[in-house]
Amino acid sequence: MPMAEPVSRVAATYVRLLYDYLQAQDIDPERLLGASPPVDQHFVPLPEWQAMLTRVQAMEGRPALGLRIAAGIGPRHFGVVGYAALACATLADALLRMERYHVSVYDVNPAVVRHVSEGISIEWGVSRGRPGALVDETAIASLVQLARDMTGRYWPVAEVSFVNPRPDDVRPYEDFFGGVVRFGEPMTRLLISPEALALPLRKSDPALLALMDQQAEQLLARVAAVPAEVEAWRRTLVVLIREGRPSLADLARAHHVSARSLQRRLAERGLGFQRLLDDTRQHLAEAYLREPGLELAEIALLLGFSEQSAFTRAFRQWTGLAPAQWRKQARASAGTGASTGALQGPLP
Image (cartoon, rainbow, N blue to C red; front, top):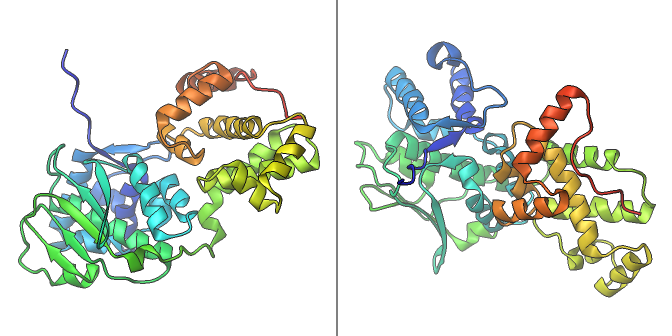
């Protein structure tokens, strides 16, 4: 049998950006578009998103709707991908992390990030169709605005290309992006300069990392009492996992010791670094799997895995179950009050 065509879709958190935009205009979004996606709904099919944008465009009758919608973007509209990106050191690191997991937010045409002499080029082809100007412009403007928000400053995009026809007035696009804007091109493309890529990300608002911090605290509270030194290592690992650098060298650096010294101290506790990392990741994974609003791809991101398949293999080694199976059993057990999962024992 031929394989089914992938279904294009966008994240429900991303769709709520449109509802926020309408509310800011003193327009009742539910009267115009219907009820907002429920909290436990992760995706909205692309045709529904297209219809929403078309309805708002018809009501307003003004060009460049996507640029106005994007003005209100924040990390929360990109779900955990936005929060995880904010934990990166520079805009370049954040864009690379967002590109890796962008399908959990915007699953239309796949994105490809290329390092070029002029900076970084982010490209979207048309292999899964052309969703139209409203969809494309909202997506690209939202990504740019989010990147600017994360750096806490405005910076011009070196070049933007759209596959859609040139609008009657290109000035709003030139004003928004601040660089060359092209239309009728073979692919959608963003070119970001090295100067912008090197900008550090702002981390002054701790609420932006509340989701991961809350889960980490719940993890540490649930785990049985361990020696203070082991607990300190685990707490640091939680942060390193979130930042995508859970290595022995980084853990040792964070505790101001050499990697060899840390290995020796772990061995004195009957531990190895990999066991400490796996145990911490497993307990975090189980906490995230109990959250119905998190997709497996997002959980893989939160745990620092490069791919969902790598997370699935690791979780099966830890528990004997695939993540989806464990989640199903956990939900069933929660309904009966039984304990769930094949948990490892606490660390010594």
